[in-house]
Amino acid sequence: GFGIAIHANGLRVLRALGVEERVLQGGLLITALETRDAAGRTMSRISPRIPSRRIARHHLVQTLAEAAAGQGVEIRYGAEGAAAEPGGVLVTADGARWPADLVVASDGINSRLRDSLGLRARRALLPDGATRLLVRRQGLDDAAGEGAAAVETWSGSRRIIMSPVSEAETYLALSCLEADEAGRRVPLDLPSWTAAFPHLAPVLARAAAETDWRFVRWDRFQVLRLETWSRGRVALLG
Figure 1 (cartoon, helix red, strand yellow):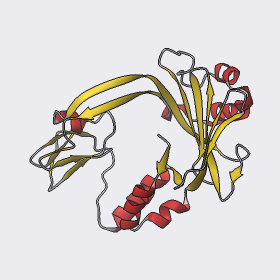
Figure 2: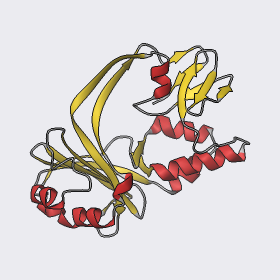
Figure 3: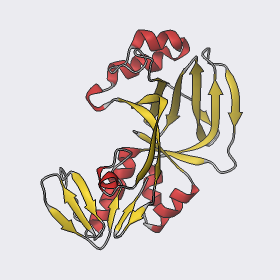
Figure 4: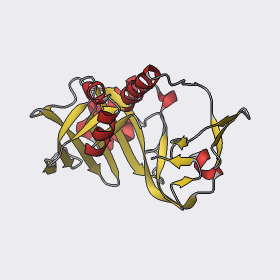
């Protein structure tokens, strides 16, 4: 996802973990939400009663990992979760079994742990999706008071969401219909997107030139419904 919004409930959790200040040092306060048309004209501007924070996910994950390690947590890299058992066992792809008082599954919308427990009730694929990435923020947007603005720009069925997530980085989500072959192409089809959003040509050019496309993909949006969010000693998040 590259960027994430943290609202009041998330801040309470970070505060309880003792990492709120460190996380917020790398994020930005979003004081305005804007919608613009293909020519860049502002169609609406909302100042939320309770502003949110936008943060780069890599900063959030790194901060949480450092705090966990400071509490004696052992972090194992390259250990791919394959399944979970209600009795409190995590099974990794190499066949190892890890007994636990509590297994927390937070392995995303394609969660193998969730599906190994048969918790999915319904999965609906939506007609659109997005390519997500980070670009250098310098010169791309202006501060809005004491914070910054998150901007959603529409051109036909395509949209670009821009939100600064730090003093140095801006999060981009380039969204289009699944049927839009040029729109979902990775690496970015620069001529096609520039034609749709000519006023964002500098942003798109920077994204095309500076992004390491090995780590970027277009993902289709989907909605999941679960039978339950826990089974035995296994709980799901996200």
